Length: 250
Image 1 (cartoon, rainbow, N blue to C red):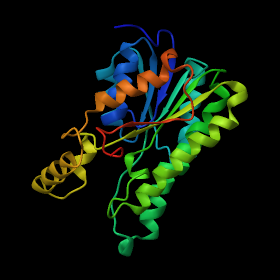
Image 2 (cartoon, rainbow, N blue to C red):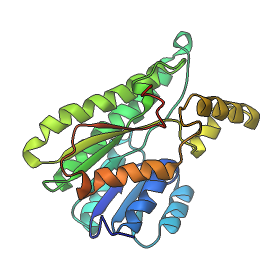
Image 3 (tube, helix red, strand yellow):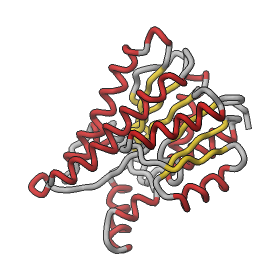
């Protein structure tokens, strides 16, 4: 333990599983108090127990602005500031362009774009000068995968936000950076197909497309998030940090 986030306050949306939970655990181990959100109380409570006494769970959906207001009211009452914001919550659903529905579009953009936008906007009054904002995007913003048009467009919007917010917030020296993971072995990977056999085949196919020949681990994204959250990245802003085993690079 190096305590790179000693005394810091972090907020991580979608923190009850996968990348969010791994990052929350890492931030807490490095000395931060972490507020996490999740849409299911049982999973949220389990995550808080796993992270330990340095965690506070707040039930909520980032697509519901009232839930975001409640999150930040809780943070303000308990800690009164946010040093690190990891806007991580998002969904991935794959639909061919011929089958895209208004419902699919609205659901994806409500969570991945609108939810992320207001996660950041509503946090700004609690962010001190010099704070760090980290956005979770994806390699799909740079690659053309089949049946991923809506999902990819939502993540491309996230990358664009980082550029514009870097300039919007430069007077406050708030750093805004993007992490773009490749295929990561998280619980959501198993929900993309109806059977375990199909899910295993999907994972194998994705691993084969990665130059390093495997799926990534949530902890590897957490390592990147820690770098962007800490003073080690003090001169880093506006970037897209690919943690993808080379998938979008070659």
